[in-house]
Structure formats: structure tokens, C-alpha cells
Image 1 (cartoon, rainbow, N blue to C red):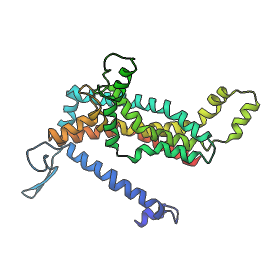
Image 2 (image 1 turned 90 degrees about the vertical axis):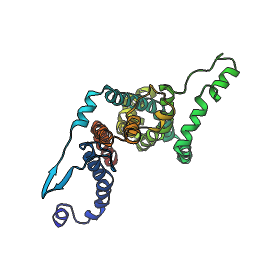
Image 3 (image 1 turned 45 degrees about the vertical axis):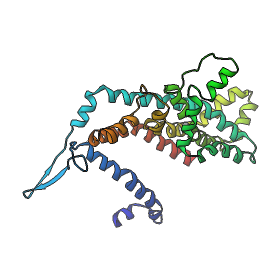
Image 4 (image 1 turned 180 degrees about the vertical axis):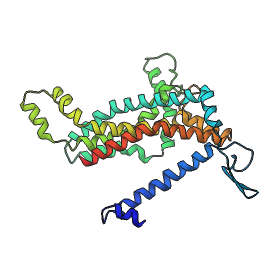
Length: 298
């Protein structure tokens, strides 16, 4: 401990210690535990996996089983689940960006006294339970729901549109639920822009469109990346929305994880699925921390 303290400038050790302890307790240790389960064998007992270390006849034996990872490569279901999760997370992030950027821009350019009100309206839906909001979308999107009944009442359609149990419903639920995670980082970035740069571009003859693409958009790059990662990373492992709004054809890794853990009781395979998912997310997580640090420094 003293050696570590000597490497850190005086007075900063106790400041940076809590986040590292938090990271150790709530990320590193659980990840190590899950990694240990992923290299064990599934057995009928409690817990349902074989121990990695075993002391028998004064001999310590270490058992590491990589069959679970080989199983993931052999069964195309898991590759399909990973691919679907990444594709849905990517397009959900794009939709959130297309909707969230104008919202963040409008709030940042609104009068100062109005900005807290608009931000409150963005956050207000999240005060309701996440599960209740998803159930509300089920009531809107089902065949005899509010949207289909309204369209049939005004004569736009003759029979209900099939929206529930489709990827469309999954995208609607994800974009609706994760939109605040895109709007808030963009607003935090856009509100700090130096207005003199925009005025200088206008003085040099640039119209509003040119000023936006030449000045505002490049300056907001850190906010775009931060918001995109805040949406993309959790959506990859999303379980509730694809389970309730998506059909059997919507296979995401969160649903597969649930099936392996709680229905099949195959903890080692489920743990190996989780480890691979974390490895896939290392790149976006690293990008997020990099651009978050740049955002803080700016």
C-alpha cells in the first residue's frame, strides 16, 4: 500500500481510491468469478458446476475446461445471437443519434431558463419503472392496440398491422428506452461550444448549414461517441425488450444467456457466453472511456 501511495501525487491517493475500489468490487471480482465458472464442467449439484481447485490426498488439482468455448464455436445459434445483438445495437444507436442529436442541439440552443425544463421532459419517462414502460408499448403495438385501432378508425388501414413480436417493436422499445442516454451527453457537449467560433464562421460568409457541418458537428464528435457508446454497450446485452416485444425470431445474446442460466441450468456455458460478450465489448468500452476523458478535459 505504501509503495502504491508513493507512486501517486500527495493528496490524490484517497480521492482516486474509491472509484478503483468500486471497479474492483463490482467489475473485476464478478468478472473473475464468471471466468472461473466458464472453465468448469456442468454437473448436477448445487452449485451446478465443478470446482476449479480441489484438494485430494494432499494434492492440489486444478481443472480448467475449455469445452464450453469450443461448444460456442460449434453451435451456430450462439454466433447468430452475437451477430443479431451487434446489428440491433448498431442500428438502435444510429436511430437514437438521428433523433437525439436534434433534441440535444435544440435544448443547448434554447434560452438558459428553459433548458432545465426540456431536460426534465427528457428524463421524466425514466421516473416510471422500465418494465412498466415496456409493457405500455405492448399495449400500443399489439394487433388490437391503440395504434392499430386508431389507424383503422380513420380508415388508413383495413386490418391490423403486425408490429408486436417483430424486430420493429424491438427497435421502438430500445430507441424509446435509451434515447435519454444519447441526448444528455450530446447536450453536455453542445452547451459548452464557444459561440464566437460560430459567429466567426458566419462573419466569413458561411451559412447555417455550412457552419453546422464545418464547426458544430466536428466539435460535438466527443459527445456523439460518448452517447453512442452509452446506448450501444447496454443494448448488446439487452434482455427485457427483446423478450417482451420481440418474437421467437429475435435472438439476442441476453435471451440466450437467460435460457442457459435459468432454463437449461448450464452455468458454465452461460458464463462463457458472458465472457465472450465482455470481450466483444472491450473495444467500445475503451473508446467510451477515451472520449469521456477527452470530454472532461475539454
